[in-house]
Length: 229
Image 1 (cartoon, rainbow, N blue to C red):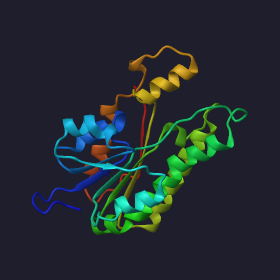
Image 2 (cartoon, rainbow, N blue to C red):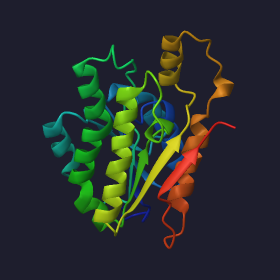
Image 3 (cartoon, rainbow, N blue to C red):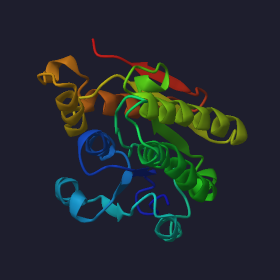
Image 4 (tube, one colour):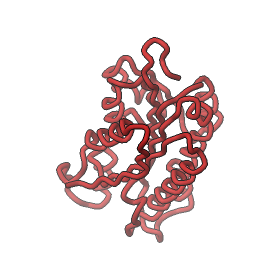
């Protein structure tokens, strides 16, 4: 879905209503036609008011019938940024089956299904798939087992996609902890005082996404690790 009028590439960003997803949308708005995904139209109100040329794409990613219907009109896609996800933390002893299932569903299975449904459009657009992973996708920590397992799985998915679809570029980005509302909830759960300066800014991570997309076509940025300085 490249705009015939402008010939600008089209980017679909999931989890774009706030935080990192909204920052990525702002970063790409000047160069891309944007489809901004979120669970509901209401959660996209703020970013769509800020970026009036963008289009909302509200769908629950784990509702696979609704997802297939939402994807059907997309015939060509140049960029797919998988940003949506959840972080439901807890020790192995305290983690329930539902917690494991919900985390893997949101962070891996929904990503795999959305990508599968969009493969024809991505192939048509010489697409670039960006997976917002985590430092937890490289190293697990105590209390983060289900989340880390999902992010290790996401990394494996990206590696396999890269090999199976050589016409696409696939970039896994592993940022450290980011200053977002989700991070505030995590820190509150840890019983610590929140200090924004300890974390990466969403704008910095969004810039890294832009840099990966701007890499000339003869280069393939397969994995980017970003830590707070």
